[in-house]
Length: 111
Length: 112
Image (cartoon, rainbow over the protein chains, first blue to last red):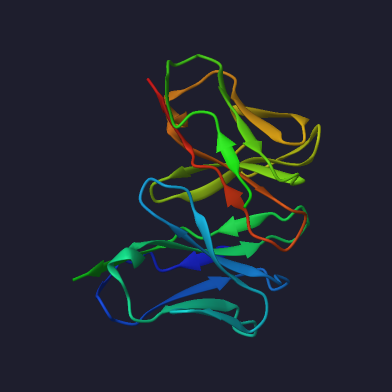
C-alpha cells in the first residue's frame, strides 16, 4: 500500500457544485495532516491543517477518520477559482517534520 | 508570513555542468527540504536538513548533494547535470514538528 493515495481525477464540476476528495494513508501513527492547493506551474500552498477529527474554513471542510485511515476534503459552492490540484499530505514517522505528499487530485470547475 | 526565496525561476544548463540551486528562508526555521516534482510522480524528497551543517538523504538523493552552512540557506547541487534531472525543483522550510511547509516558487531546470 502506498503511503498516501489519492484519486488523480480530474473532477470536472459546474460552478456551485459540491465536490469531495478522499485520501488514504498507511502510517497509522500520523497525528497531523494537511491539504495543499497547487495551481498550474506554481508551488503548493497550504490550504488547511487537520489536527483532530476535522476542520472547517468557509466553503472548505476537511475530515479525518483515524480508524479507516482516510482524510477527506469537501468543497461547497465551487468557484471557477477553485480549479487546481489538491494534494493530501501526511507526516512520516521518525521526526524532522518529514511530510509525504500525495500525487494530487485535479479539479476543474466550469461555468 | 514566512518567505522562501529560490534564486532562479528558470534555468537552462548543459549536460555535465555543475548546477547550484539556492534557497533562502527568512523565519529562522530549523527544517529545510528539497523536492523535485515531475508529471505523474508528484513531489519526491531529495534531501532535507534539520540544522546547520546537518543533512539527511531523502528518497532520491542520487546525483545530488546539499549544503547548509547557515540556518537560512539551503543549497542543492547537481554534481554533473544530466537530462533526466530536468524537472521542477521546490525548496520548503518548516518549524520542528507538526506544521505544514512553506514552499518557494520553484526553479524549472532544463538540462540539454
